[in-house]
Length: 454
Image: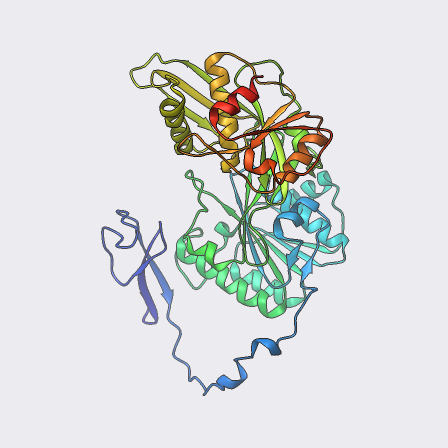
């Protein structure tokens, strides 16, 4: 080890730094997770006296900026980011391998280039020829997009400093490596320091930084959790590879809301925005089958109708199965306990399966009433009315609680041809008048089941 080098030990799980090795991380409790990192220690420099009066600025003296967003013309992407990208900010896009992250950002780069913004696409995983083939397949052809096939941080910084780019895309951050550290790409130190250096450079030049990150088997972004705190926006690109659609979900956004989702379909020509998500998720709905209901979930300001399926069968094992796909497992156990206690349904010896059609994952409490109705429908083998939408939260006493933004849900159900909606009694007072749909207010589970199966 050279004289100016320093040795630290970094936890690969949480990013904690220690001056000496230990078998267990004191912060996250993981064993054998500390990895040695060597960094060159720069000599101390003289720090001039700082004029603090020139740094602090009074809030009312700062001029507001209403033109800080750059729309990409990709409606679903702009919806999730809050109206577009912010110059000088950093965005992290995470998702499973092969889900379409590179395709999404390459199409975003193409949309920005059409708006006369210069874009640098840094690929540490693909060659320029591969990038050109993908761009041709997606119909992207412009001289405003530059490709750099390198994973060396110093080379990337030199390219950025040569000329001005409005946006820089890095695919992916786990492939970058700084010469200042001897560790391999993808380690905690490399990821943290590479992102920090790129952020500093892009912030000074007013360049937007778009990063692609891989995720682990547990669904978390590979690398330290601190990476999510360093960037301004964190987006997750989700979906089942066997399905033809993808969902873009915001996990963090310093410049907008985090409740919106964007929905795309994917084919050989790339990603396309979905104009009507409700119609997409109800395309293959079968009618007259027990255990199936249509529910309405609110994602940001957008109501979406989709099919919820339940299957209740006799258990063939000693312990009954409780399997949920797309719905919270603990919430399912809670709703089953309410049905057992308050409605006297004997489900202790039954296997219960819940599925949100299409592979969606939703956690809104407004789905509760739809879930219990589907379970009872399968248990009694009685189908729910085909023209009915069910919305409501279920309390521990079996009461039906109100849900937000009920007018938007009613309007969405009416526009898709549904003639009846079962909703909480309190929501019925503020639902307004809609001549195209019948409103069935309920206050308890017993009333809800009578309304759903009538």
